[in-house]
Each structure stands twice: as C-alpha cells, then as structure tokens.
Length: 163
Image (cartoon, rainbow, N blue to C red):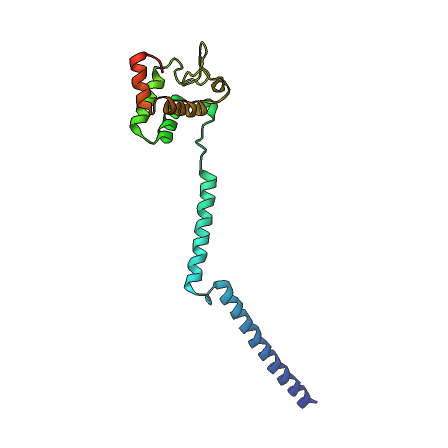
C-alpha cells in the first residue's frame, strides 16, 4: 500500500509539474503580449503616434476658445478684413475702404440715406434685407461691373462726389 501511495504521489507530482510548466508558459506568453515585448518597434511607434494624436485632439477640444463673431456684431475692422480677404489685393482693398469710409453709412449695414441703403449705399432693396458681408459682396460686384476696379470707382467718386 505504501508503494502504491508513493507511486500515486510521484505521478501527481509529475502531472502537477507539467501543469505548472504549461501555466508558466501561458503566463509568460500573456505577459509578453501585455508588455508588448513581442511586437516590432514600428508597431510601438504607430501606437505612440495614435496616442499623441488623440491627446492633441483632446487638448484642443478642451482648451480652445471660440473667437468667431456673430454677423450682427461685426465691426468696421471685420468688414475691412473681409474686403482684404475677398479682393486679395492691397491697393484695391485700400481704395474700397476709402470709398466706403466716405459714404454716409459709417460701416453700418442698417444705414439709410434717402433711398440708398447699407454699407455701399446702393439703391437696391436687396441691400436692406441682407447682412454687411453680402452688402460688401454686392458693392464689389457693382464696382467691378460699372467701373472695372475699386480704384476706378474711388477716382470717379473723388471727381464727381458720387459713384
């Protein structure tokens, strides 16, 4: 009986040892996956780029401030910047700004002077219904069609006191 018990214990020891080896091997394999030791350096670099991009997006979305201005709160400076962006020519921009500064509107898109309306002081009733940006677009198209350029419109205004 003692021999049988010893044989049984040795078989159990052998079985438990092989089970322990199997468990250790699986654990090491899991650890290498968790620690990412088995992957290539380029994979690690890609994962770092993903995290860096994610953190940058999170930072920007949390700490960015909205500097946009509602169209009804535009100031003359905003309109002048819009003219520069639209025309993309500093000389034409200067001429149009000087022309609109001589108008009676004082850069107010709601301004009225008799039958003349808006920033460009045009007679179109369309100008009474739209905001200042659309009025400036209308004025640019008007000056281009009638005079060919903003500076030509300004020189006409200086000569005849109207445009």
